[in-house]
Length: 370
Image (cartoon, rainbow, N blue to C red):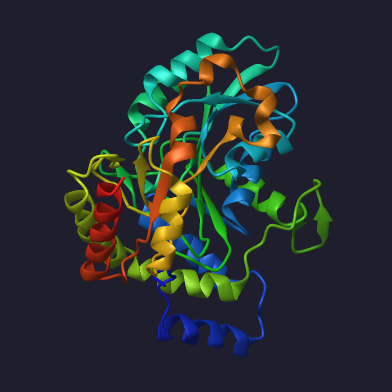
């Protein structure tokens, strides 16, 4: 079975973890400190704060920026549910925004539509643009709108480490950028996440929040605010440091491999391909099927032929948690169609062109019979 993705782990990661285990320091320590420095250097930003997951990164960011019960936050309607959940968890109101049907990210038109339709009592405080599947959102446009409407920008770059917009790494444009190191991400630490920011004061507050609000001085330890336990461990950071060294090569291979799908499926009726945007990191390769093609049947067909496939991502207003936010004007939204018809295909740098060629031929054969 060719999985959707397989973590690219080797002897270097195993050795790095073993060294940490032998040291006896399993919690947040020197490895985490060095990993933060290396990530900051790679991203080209002043501060990185490691946490336990991408969700924790988003949650701490909202808390540290003071977003809460009297606020509303613009959120893409096509993303992993955590993007909306963290808004709800801090007591704020998510305002859902449609996405482009080809690159799966928010557009200027969809943002303005959401702003113009907004009629709530809460203050419209922030926007969380998502770089879906590693495709860089148009941060130039988003930052211009954010300035115009006085919005805080929190980048959800969970899937997009290494992706670039206008030659800058994504995550560095907003007040904060949030990353995930889940096993399906290009850089993994098992579970884990990171927040990057240019703001040193904000970074200090994030570090307090991730560790119970502990303030350490030479004289004493004090708990200066009610914080969380969102610390990464040293053996996770040790894995991440090795993974980061492999990132450039992984991105190069993924950007080559995606051509197998883009060229092989380009003339197949019933399939819409993702837009090939400069700076895309290709964490996931998702296609969209026409409505006359059954996604469950294709998933079953591919599984029987030893290929794993799955839905791409969620439409928030289609989920039980957020059905109260559904409005009639959303019925024709791209995000609802992508939720119903999006299909993620096996994709990572370890896979071979021949393996993906076989899947392309299977899809062609299946669709021709419909």
